Amino acid sequence: MRERTNKADYMLQIIEIGDVAWQGKTQPVFCRAEDGHEYIVKGKYAGRKALVAEFMANHLGRTLGLPIPPFDVLEVDPAVFKYGVNRQVIELLGQGPLFGSRRVFNVEEISQTNIKIVDPQLQAKILAFDWWVANGDRIYGESGGNPNLLWDVSGAKCWVIDHNLAFEPELMNEFFSNHIFHAARSLWTNRFCREMEEAFTKSLHRLQVLWDQLPEDWVGVDMGLDLEKIQRILSKYQSDTAKFWNS
Image (cartoon, rainbow, N blue to C red; front, side, top):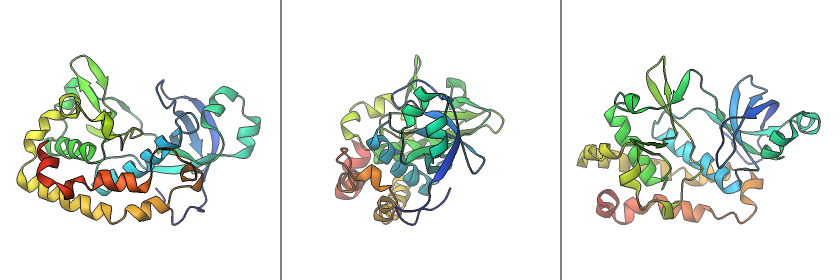
């Protein structure tokens, strides 16, 4: 994953477009980039707000040490966009900057069986991260759901994906009832909370830097998410620490 030093940095070129990765709100598409890697790419159909949420939340999650696949900002090579065969899929992406998460292989959506294998401390950290960034979209229960976690069958580890609904506090009312790792809240000891707060604070110091790396096309319009809103959401643990951890 490249560190974008400014908004004008060169974007990875998509040289091959495959099929829609899975049906859903954002309609991501399998693509191959010039670096030889495959990416799961979101674009026009997902909307700018989703792309900004993905970029910011993925960066923040990786600073906390979460197992989030490498990601990058990409764009469709003009020749592919003009002469590509699958016009319907190409239109889902559109022109301009796109968000791409590196595709990981030999994985499946996490199951009830595999949930029990995930390290309890990692469960607690993922739960805290989602609570911090106001991501209510990691839902799972006996009847299924939308866990947004992939399970590496051979490596026996999970990958944390899909943060397009981060920074949506209005979707958090049932968070601790619906989250896939809700039971790990019992591991939020005083020591754990202090360590997470230290990690949150370090990440907050980089917030402006991360925002400045966003493509201008994503932030040049009113799309319902700005730096002030993100800052306000991420600072809640500072303004009322007891309420943050005990809501």
